[in-house]
Length: 265
Image (cartoon, rainbow, N blue to C red; front, top):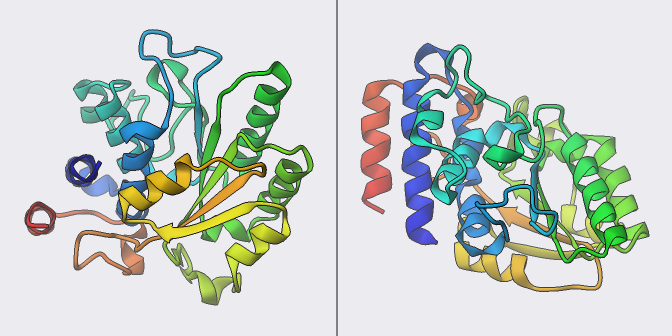
């Protein structure tokens, strides 16, 4: 999975470079690389020959600004083609800065409106329960996204309905569009909050794929919340923890330096 994470990080950088002056959300794309590597490196259950199989696991990506790593992971998993990746942010493409639902391409949800994805995922988990399916439903949200009230309505519902088939992953990179999350809206302790809402909370290093896999694999009688402690722009020194890389243009010179750093890890 570590090798997969490096592949995803390099792919995300290449996609960002190809965007040219359109720019892309590199910061959040790089902070979530190991999360996607863990999920598509052995956690998620799916069948490429039957992509709409009711028994598949679902991944609902609520934080829309991580498509660089998301699309890269879908390519490595076999859902997307090289042509799909090359079409990113071009006219007429299905693949833009916010993912659009397409089950054939492995995309469960159209991202963009913060917090709605988690509610959608809770609904999917409830439906799977009622149908007697063994599927698990995963949802990735950002820590800035946890400012939204709908996150907490969804959390309350997940616990109320006993959705132990639901796993929430919080990409805790501590930066959002307007600045540090602690300054924009101080969330105090997200772990305590989700515990209070009835979740089994696991806090891990979000750049340790083995720790992530262990946390995501462990079963519980409650809905699970994995808080992945990450760094925005992880892997590239001049991007790490820098707000301007929330969305920015990557130059050829910056790309060359970034690739050198990632490859030498």
